[in-house]
Image 1 (cartoon, rainbow over the protein chains, first blue to last red):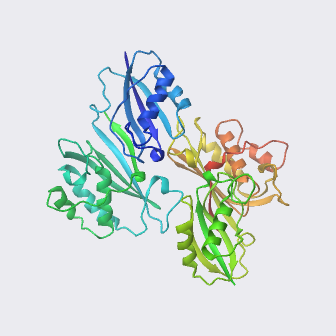
Image 2: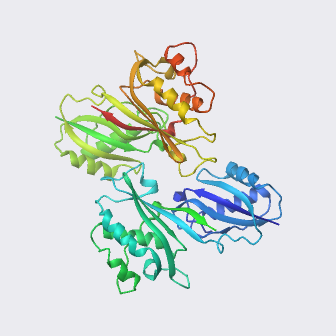
Image 3: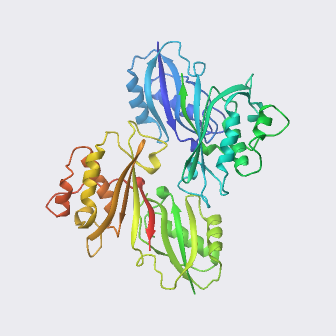
Length: 243
Length: 243
């Protein structure tokens, strides 16, 4: 048996998220069926995590066990020939038998992109959250500093989160202007359901002056406040997973 | 009568180009019919130029004459409410009666985007030309310098070009790495049919070592050589038109 690891890039616009589910086509389903077509037997992928409907990925990591003895590059070439245009395999390699894309993950990098043009932008709309109001970026950066470190992020998740613990470590949170875009790069040990999108929604409220940077500390201490709205999915991209 | 000027942004993926034509929906057709819906009478747009099928625009300039006395912002707001997601009005203003979007144009800025990842990129594919081979960027920059200035660009157009003269001025041609993208910014007085895409196709052949930078001079002197292939449309974006 070989354990094969794939790094996937996808445009999530057309999909109901990563995981196989009833209400639409998932990325997992498309990759699994394409893989089955390539090697002739059904395959179950283990992924580094889920992504929600409409979320993109530049570096989703998955692995699967197979008794076929194809060289890893044959998976890359073969899948890229068969997969639809909005999904591609960036890398394929053989890994140790006990490598597990989910349990072995040590951290993840997510990027959330805001687009700050006065009217909606057809050229940026597919990969960003369009906000017309100007944002106070220094207030957002001050708020971001509160989020870095080991905290209980219970306030920063949405309904349906089934994590048993809510303490996570954020390694860094950088707000990078890239006219007319604003990129929010979040690196951390792990993330609760919708955690990045709730963090971004809350940071945007700080940027709009609806919430103070210090308010973030109250949220982290569980002091009764509600976090901001969940930022829409199309601005989010899973950039990289570390092992 | 008011003369109204609009600056349009659009994602050209779904369209058969700017101009109204038989073989598909054009951007012009969608904007004209939306405008007619807004003001209740048919309108004919004068544009700064055409764009081909699949080409994008961040700053397409158009104007039209109307006897309606709406404030310009009402055109922007009204059209943005009615237009499909892949077309938007960035600005609307009233201009002098004799302003003509095509004849008054003094220059244009086009950006062509290459994507240099080893496998096709779902996240960049919509707005770039995917090239897997590495490119010699310093050779491309040397070649680009030959194109700047006043030249006869007869070799850099495609069949169907109906321009009476083929001399144009290129103000600047900059090649800007933006990992994993390479942006080619071309500013000039005017452009022949497919001129930017033929220039890019030719520069890419220089980058691949299939053509020397000096070969560009021969092409500009009309010395029997053929220019490179026409680069595909989805990498091209009309950024700005100057008046």
